[in-house]
Length: 285
Image (cartoon, rainbow, N blue to C red; front, side, top):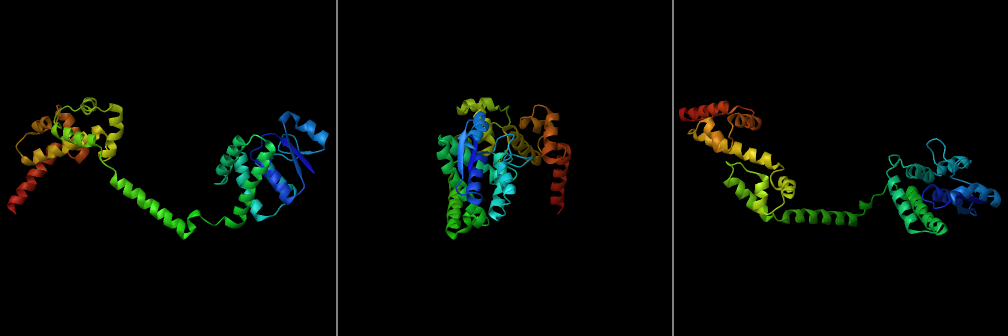
C-alpha cells in the first residue's frame, strides 16, 4: 500500500510511517511531495494521503494523525498508547501534554535541519521512534542515575562544584571597596565616585555588589552600616541624636529617624532610652 504526504517531515509525517510499517502494513511505501501536489499525486499514484487537510488520515479536534491511525486500526499496544500523547504534544506544540514532547520536537527539528533528503530523513527518523517505543515498552520506570556508577559520578560532580565554589577567590576590588566604605561611612558616598576610584564601570559594580555584600544593594548596605555605627555611638551616651545622625552621614535628622526605625522597628529616642535603662539596671545589679 502506498501512502503520500507533504515534503520535509518532522513529527507526524515520520511517526505515522513508523506506526503503519510496524502495526498496519510492513510493506507500506511512503512518498513525499510538495504540499500543493499531494492530492494530484495521490490520485495519480493511487496512494493514500495522510497528515494533510481534508483527507481521512488527518488531525481531528485536539488529536493528531498518529492518534487517528491508532484509532482507525484499533492498535492496543500499551507502549504505542504511551507514545501517543508524546507525539501529539510534539506535533501540536502542546508540550504540557507529556514531559517528553519538547525533547521529541527538538530532536526531530534538528534532524530535519541536518538532513535535506526526505527519504533519508524518514530512514533516520524511524530510529527515533524505534528508540521511543523501546523506552515506552521497557524503560519508562528507569532513571539515568539508577546505576550505582551513575550515582558515583553525580556525587563526584557535586563535590567538585562545592569545592570550586569554596575556592572561589574574592576579587581584590571587593576588599578595597570594604575599606573605602569603612573609612568614609559618615560621608556622602556615591557608587559613581567609588567606581572611578576603583577603575570599575558603575553598572558592573552595581550589578556585582550584592554578590559580595550580604545580598544587599549598595544603598541598603550603606544604610545598614550607618545604623550599626549609630547604635555604637548611642551606647557611648556622649552625643545627642542630632550629633549621632551627623556623625553617621545623615544630614537630615528626620531621614536618620526614618531609616533607624526601618532597621530596628523603634525610634532613635526610644532606643536610646532603652539603652540607658539597660545600663542603669546593670549598675543596680
